[in-house]
Length: 251
Image (cartoon, rainbow, N blue to C red; front, side, top):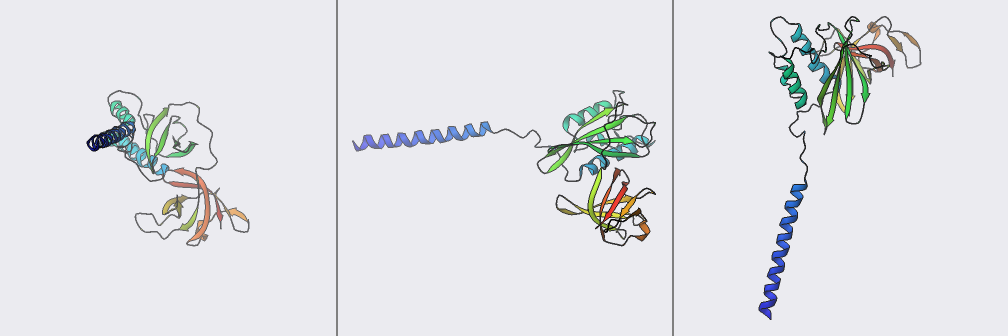
């Protein structure tokens, strides 16, 4: 009887072990692999991601001695795999430029958000020259804690989505005495982004820029009267050179 009970106990242990192994392997098989596991990501601001790709591409198109493909820009790791393959194929396809979306590289351009979701921001890039009517829309997708360029959609002259009032709106501190490589001829706004300090943008003022004091008085901005490290809320439009300032509210 003791021997029989021992055999039963051993068999029970074996059954438990087999069930554990099967369950473990089954759980492994049920795990879904991350299709973006190898995708390069950036924690930079989506505007910076767009400018840092569009500007070098534009410069390489304009240059006589090189091209975006010779510079290797078609292999940018922040591009999605399918977008990278499409840009590579465009080198010999004869189609419209896949990044500028036109044959003439714009001398100056602006960018603005046309739609924003939890996991994606769509940024439209357009030449400031009104004769260049084509534009590119960058789909900047979020994955984990970073961003990548999922797609670039060209529109060669269709209807431009309506303007958002401001594409740049941040609160921070005004500084002009800034270290290189920043240009100390310009005022900069130093601000936080997602709780991370040290972000900055050059500020471009015009005769129409309005300044509002902390008591509500409005006047045309005179940057020469600004004081270092003044706290301000800045509204404007993003360009490749910085933020074209529409309004400054001093705090």
